[in-house]
Image 1 (cartoon, rainbow over the protein chains, first blue to last red):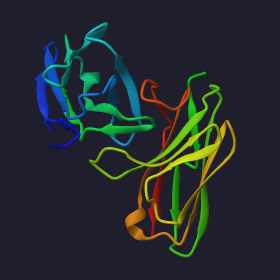
Image 2: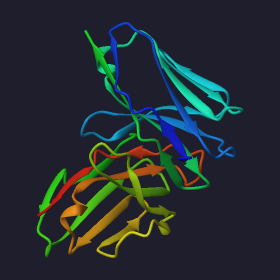
Image 3: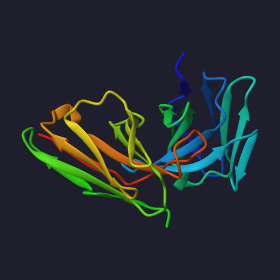
Image 4: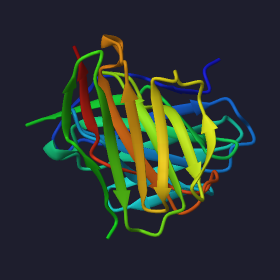
Length: 109
Length: 114
């Protein structure tokens, strides 16, 4: 089993839709989780950190399910500008981040 | 200021050239990282510096040589690269090293090796 797994997509959704991505992780001892957003040919940008059961920031909600070892990212009222690749990231012991392969989202008018 | 800067933005070099990539942050972060990213793949960790000391080398070939002159600067010296080393090289920093520390990425240097 990969350390961090994501559905690569693409998820094609209309503006205004709600979309959710799941990410599963293998290390049950993981304590923190991150969602990064990466636009084409740009750097990853931190979208959200998750340290407990979840986090919410505007239209974005991240939820953590420790028992099933997955984290989800929910985007409400999708905008065209949300089109990007969303990377699920789980720290591995100390300094090393394990990146999922990313889920591509395309929001269309 | 939550910015990590990298220079140059683009670099084209021959296999016999020596060049350096530079990264700078003024957030007071004490951990800095080099990543390599190929197209349609996630970033791969290369090196980690913690308090200006190299703490992780992910078995990177010796043609890549990192240097941390001070707590704000990180360099990556390149020598005798191969065409397969062409990629986006990303620098990142975090307050300190550790699994709770969010990493902030610079815009990257897009490297082409001819």
